[in-house]
Image (cartoon, rainbow, N blue to C red; front, side, top):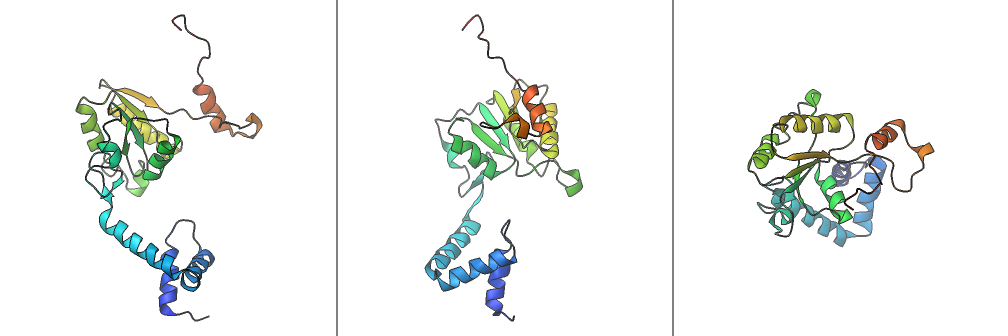
Amino acid sequence: MSLSPLLQELISALRTLPGVGPKSAQRMALHLLERDRTGAQTLAEALVQAVEHIGECQVCRNLSERERCGICEDGTRDRGVVCVLESPVDLMAVEQTGGFNGVYFVLKGHLSPIDGIGPDELGLEQLFTRVDGGEVSELILATNPTVEGEATAHYIAEQLQQTHVNITRIAHGVPVGGELEFVDGGTLAHAFAGRRSLKRSADD
C-alpha cells in the first residue's frame, strides 16, 4: 500500500520511540490525524519546546531547562547525601517513593567499554570533584543490578576509597509481596548477602 509521504514520515518518526513497532506507530499516527488533531498539535508544540529548552542540570546532570534543577535548588534537601543513578527515569522512580530527601547525580548510562562508554561519558570527574568539595557525607550507589551497573558502582567505590565519604550500595533482594519459589537465584543471593538483623541493640 502506498502511503502519503507525510504520513509515512510521521509513522517513521513515531517508531523512534522505545517499544513502538510499525503497527503501533501506524495506529498512533492514524489516531492523531483522524480523531485528535488538537492533541497532535499540542504534542508537536510540547515536543519542540522540550527539545529546544530542556538541557542538563549543571550540578546533578538531570534533565532541566535551568542551569540548576528544582531538586538541586531545593533548600530543604539534604545535600550531604547524594544518590548516584543511571538515568533520569531512575531518579523519577526514587522521587515517587517519597522516602529520599537527599540529592542526586545522574550518570546517563553505565560503564561499557565495548560501546565506548567510559568515565568521561558518565561525568565521573564532575562527581569526584563534587565529593572532593567536602559537602558530601554519603554517596549512595543506586546503579542497576546488572553486570554493567555493578561494575560501574564498583569502579566509583574504588576511586573514592581514600575519601572521607561513606559509600553505600542499595540493597537488592526479594520484592515486597514476592514468594521465594518464584524469585531467581541471583536476586535471592543478593537478598541473603544484604540481610540485616531484626534484633534490637542494647541501646534501643
